[in-house]
Length: 465
Image (cartoon, rainbow, N blue to C red):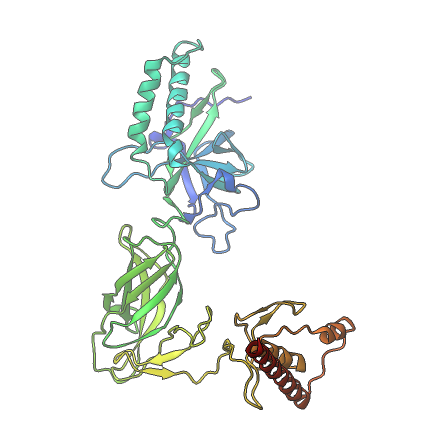
């Protein structure tokens, strides 16, 4: 067998083997805790794959023997920092993964190209950071000491443990829990020592951000309460958004010309950020307050910390004197918990209510028997009719009432309990109650008369006593 003669890190020199990234990983990907691993979740895809069928891929050039490509997670250091990247506390999980990293064999059959499919990122909790880094430091020192001592077993002392904990505390402060990158290493097994040695210099991928974090996740406007504002601005708009931070979000309104160049922009005033998923803001005034027709602009979210922006949404500025509408929830006259009326008002004058022309179902208040020809206001009855509650129930405008309904209303008005044995029997037999307005009115009138006679009799007995 032809054994390659390789000096470690040959790729550092001109003309030696080197790794090249063919496909970068996607920019945003959801990190998951270990408790979330049940079921099927998405896998880390390539950045250029619109249909998510590409994966992080590297190729080893200048090497003609079988090798191993190892992929592991590392930190991403800031541009002004001169600190080297260190292993991240998060780990890789999925296909070809063991010990928190992934490995693939490359040779001439696959053109020395490794495509890492089925990878997921396991999120480590902050409270476990120091312990995990300490254990890694001790393992690294153990391997180094045993290699120096020709395989002699080494056990850490208490001083070694304390030193590892101090290093872990300092290192944990510089680790961003929502940003990682992939480090790729090319390794081969040295036939003399039977150990894995590096073929060339490792390479690092672009940053991968946690897609579900408010600090680094994707910005997205899900819905706007209204898509227009008067040119004078100061109109209150509600936005439903993906997760954001209230101290790190801005709402930008801008206008583009026919060549898609920005010709005007301004920021709205954020009034409130509700539970990271809704934003209430006031629109900025448009640059021209004397427009005579609607002007199309765009609205988008912006995160100042990293400059990330959302996809823009269409928005309009209208002329100064155009009446705009807004929906407001008002307390119902009947006092029902879910009652509402819809009002429209002028956003500039702001206080004059305009009733809606749209009919809406309402909760009917309890008022006893209605006048002749009117439908009754009903409460709520138990299934067997033995208990009555004055709580309002929803009544559809299209409902047709039966004699039982009228009789029940009359019973409620007279204070007597009505037991609908007849309708129960009809329901058991599958016969719907027949509707007859005259019979309904007669039943209501008879019950009301009986109730009035009973009250008179009770008053008479009370006077005699």
